[in-house]
Amino acid sequence: QFADNAFAGVTVLKTAHVENNRLTQLPRNFPFDKMETLTISRNPWHCSCQLAPLRKWLKGNRTRAEDSCSTPAQYRGQPIRDTPALRSCKLPTKRSRKGSRH
Image (tube, rainbow, N blue to C red):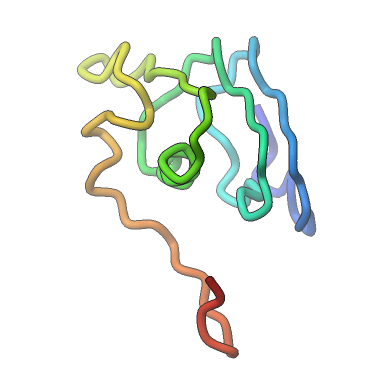
């Protein structure tokens, strides 16, 4: 398990390998912005809205880093990218004084 502030101040993380752990969540401040490679397989993911940023990253990257939900039971085995568990989640928006940068 990561502490909630484990990635505080981290702005340029390009690669993370967190497979083969007992992770159920990623911290809310996980730095997806510059992430290029992320391996997440073989973790018992809990598919709640806390994983919504991960789902967004998976959808925006043609990556094979796919894994599935372990809990809650009704979503067990469903890919994080496609599970209905995360479809209605609201993603936190980053407010920038200079407007949005895309």
